[in-house]
Length: 201
Image (tube, rainbow, N blue to C red):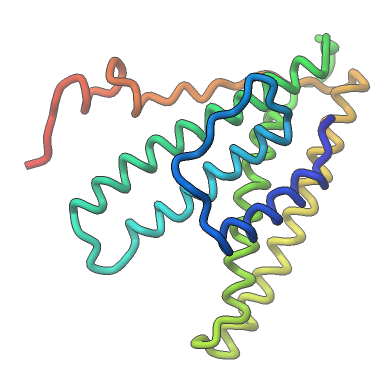
């Protein structure tokens, strides 16, 4: 079920497609029978949107009103991103069946590794852009070619680690847990800045 190469190809194809034709807002809801690939694509879309929302806040001379709007959007996207990581892990735990309770526990779940692969896909795309930017110097191009090679190597290594982890889980020689992120910033019952109604002065 879990295939790292398929996921990295999905990331690259979606990243290219969404940059060529920006996807419609908001993100569509997932069907109840969504597959792991459906979840991985929705998760990557959350990271894609998050990447570009964060860029908006870094624009020179951005207004305070824009930063406020972007901050709220970032919080919502981060929540969706984390929810989808957990959804992928829940599905994989179901597919893995009963794990060997005596197997060593892996510190990072497959969903969290997929999250890292998603971010690497975005870094690879934007670094590749910098290797060809017409307004940049040759030194800039060369620097980013070196960065691109390193990012590609890191992604290849991480994808191999994901496949190996999954095979070890199925073989009963390693196990993983669902690690809840338990974010507090979006919860009005847990965030004192919200429940205390504090405002900046």
